Amino acid sequence: MDSINCLETNVAILGGGPAGYVAAIRAAQLGAEVVLIEEREVGGVCLNRGCIPTKSLLKNSDMARSIKKSKEFGLQTDNVQIDWLSAWTRKERVVKNLRMGLEKLIADHKITLLKGKGIVISPRELLVATAEGSIKVSCHSLLITVGSEAAIPSISGVDLPGVINSDGALELKEIPSSLVIIGAGVIGLEFADMFNGVGTKVTVLELEDRILPGEDKDISEELLKLLKRRGIAFKMGARVKEIRETNGALELAVSEKETMYTAEKVLVAVGRKLRSATADIIKLGIEIDEHGAIVVNEQMKTNIEGVYAAGDIIGGKLLAHLAFAEGRVAIENALGMESRLNYDAVPSCVYTHPELATVGINEQEAGRRGIPVRVGRFDFRQNGRALAMGERDGFVKIVINAEDHVLLGGQILGAQASEMISELTLAVTLGVKVEILADMIHPHPTLSEAIMEACGDAVGRSIHKAINRIN
Image (cartoon, rainbow, N blue to C red; front, side, top):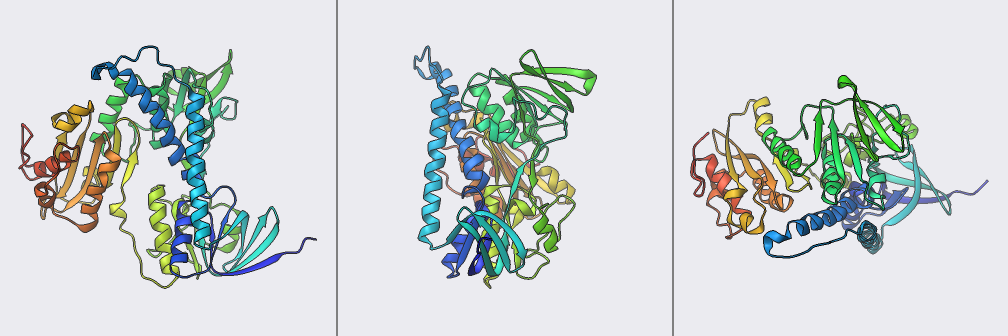
């Protein structure tokens, strides 16, 4: 029997994704000894199989789309060819460079990185199976950040060759001629946009009655219209009953009138499943809710003394930047600091073209909470920079408390929305009154002026809007 090496540390972190590695670095900054345990690559899904590789390929798709409309800008670009293998290679290079940089950061902070499968033995002990042998880790505090994985629906034929999840889509080295995507959430829409931009015939099937059902209704309806205009087909209320192989293609049977859809590839993008149902976590006695999320309080503490959890595993919005913040808060509390998060000030982004970015609460959520609101809106077709860029689609929408004019939330659909949303995130975080943003001098011409104008519109004082009223 192999001997087991032992290691003692202040903090053990199970999972090296966004929540785990940020927590490890923050713990090291605070002077703690840290052991970080990761079964696969540091950076987790986001860096290796999610956020970064998808944005890399989306850039290739965006470049192809820009070249197709280059005549508008006086450029002749006939007979342009798309080399998807080169795009794929570039994506791999981007991911590798970032991962190497992260590994160096971990080493520079003198964090002990154990690459292997970690099993929780008790609140103070883990057993890690590495390539060099088993290591028992003893700790004062344990942080669980094991994340999530792609959910696989119970559809007959979902295991057929050619039926892929997001991981498989990122490994495609050739552009599929046709693609059916099951799910119109963030993942489904980004891949729909990506492959549509390089010439794939894309159809999206969604069980709900609209895309992005958790987002503001005006925003999701406008994005749907723009994606349809680009040639992406959508079918709402579509429940896929079966996938079968027919004459070298994949055929999908949808419940409504047995409608059939045929494609070269099928991408299953119905969401993600939390990785809490492992025997060691269950045996530990950690409280888990009906959605499979580990239950934590505001300090990210579980019901087990000294055990914390952060990131996707605690449910809610499965966002890498939220996981960053939760990991930081969890470790700060574990090391004796008082730290909290404002969950109403968490931005979220969808990297379609145009982009969608939101923060705070939207008009529908305000209604559910019984908050009286005013709404401001400004369209990018009235923005000088947007017209100069050839990016006139979309708008900014602002939601404020009707009584005190404090900004409650904002939604942006348009070019560079993911970059602009931070102005609204700061305002929501600080509880700023909308007049502050309406009066703040924005550089001209910029896309961000649309935020200023939407804020002004909420209180009846937008300058460049033809109809300017108080809601």
